[in-house]
Amino acid sequence: MFDTVCKFLIETFSTDFASWLLGEPVELTELSPSELSLEPVRADALMLLQSTETILHVEFQSRPDFNIAYRMIDYRLRVYRRFPKKAMHQVVIYLKPTQSASVYQTTFEIPRTRHEFEVIRLWEQPPNIFLTNPGLLPFAALAQTEDRAEMLRRVANQIEAIPNRRTQSNIAASTAVLAGLLLDKRLVKQILRKEIMQESVIYQEIKAEGRQEGRQEGRQEGLKEGIEKERSLIIRQLTRKVGNLADELLSQVRQLSLAQLESLGEALLVFETVADLATWLENPREDSSIETGSGSVE
Image (cartoon, rainbow, N blue to C red; front, side):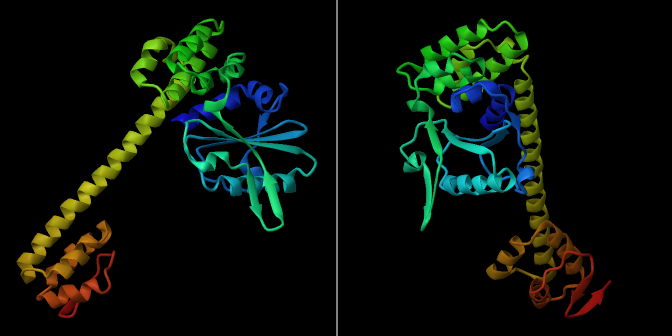
């Protein structure tokens, strides 16, 4: 969820991020990894943005990543191959406090090769740098502060002052998601107005993602339940057909896929002994043909 929010913020408020990370409010447009002949690497939230002179590579991380240094040099070389005259600024932004040494790693080193990149640990950053631009407000509650709830209230007050209703709702929803990484979600809902967040594009997108994940989980659970029912039925049929099964054979049956179980359900119709089952299990099939040592049916 947070990765969707981070990508939304940097895409929508790229000038605010340029002011923070590059030191000047330059216009940035998204650069697709496909333009670098690169399959997207698994990352919490990866963004490549470009201006006429600079490529900005930002990765938001909610947890330490032991592969981050390699990914930084990999992207740097691919960008250089595609845009040899453009400068590149690479930043890893860690969102949640951790004691891991990985969040302090700023170089990739192998013999005769060294590459450097920037790392920002939000919990060490002064919050004021996030309070001056609307696109950065959602990060203020993750910054260095003795009272995170009070900082969130300050952010909420600034959100209320944003004149554009759509921008206001998008910032509020984004703030709620990111603040939820470190604050109790009930407290976040108390401080930020729910009706404003519900108008947000990002709020609706997150809800849609949640529904999709729910459907996928439901399908997976349904599939697992279907396999268990099929497996239990097949074992009962086998027991009636050839007698009790040895533990080794039971274990092999329990490891079969749904397609293999369905095929076994047809094959066992002509089984006569446990040996027929053992023979079939030597080469489990996933089609409807039935072959045993006693005969065959096509």
